[in-house]
Length: 328
Ligand code: TXA
Ligand code: MG
Image 1 (cartoon, rainbow, N blue to C red):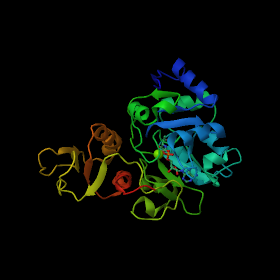
Image 2: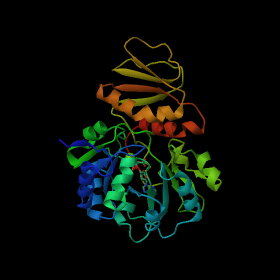
Image 3: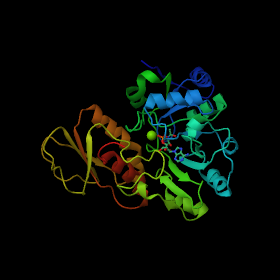
Image 4: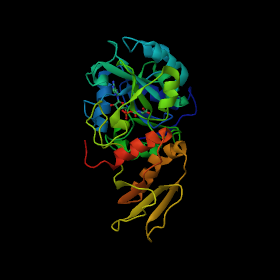
């Protein structure tokens, strides 16, 4: 079984060991402020190939490079526009990923052979310490098997990828709970590819109007961005979105019903879960809740449509993907 170790700080032996594993081409799962990442040396194509193998990730889906700051981001792009500078100054370290034209330093496998690279500077102190200790950008997708739920605790990583990672760094539960906001700056008009903890309005306040990729807010769109597969972030149980107040109309299997705010009357035997009417708090807890329901063996999870409004966009996006039928 893979070791799960707590690192006390930047100069702890555990962190040094993690850095040594990464430097020699191994895989280390580490906490970020959003979800746990499955890290490899981002400039070592063979090491990055191990990420794809471990996750069962299609080669067409590029990975994010995690950097320690603006200076280390700049060498990975062929052009660092002024909007990137302003956004990075405002939101880094933090849960904003910027897609930019890649420089020759970025291995093709990181980009999935495409022209651009996704960059983010995480704010978690262990993530930053690890990047610094390795001295190179870390490629890191979420540390789960492809199309499964993202991990927000070390034990989620262990149960999804246990045998294939060399070490799991334990930083406790993650804070934001949902993956970073992804903003594509490689095109004429900036476009949000994946809603996340940083809201569109926060970005617009810094750089003006941004487009929101339709696939991120509406079901049934063609896949316009790499890796934005329709079904994603999904629990094992069948998850369905229902109108608020509907109640549990399903009769088979072990059932859970999730409401935002007050629960309606539920039939006996249905587990009722009331989540707060606070998008940020729900973001923090959502994946952990779905992991727990999976672990307890629930077959059906009915979730009320989250409230409208921009604050809820990331939660709506993940729930819509988790409820999408079939696989992509
Ligand atoms: O919060 C996060 O972003 C977490 C933590 C670990 O940093 N990472 C994460 O990585 O969510 P992943 O691989 O699970 O999701 C990254 C998404 C994928 O959908 C991928 O297709 C997209 O980013 N992506 C990566 N490189 C891209 C690129 N060059 N152009 C467009 N999309 C890209
Ligand atoms: Mg992922």
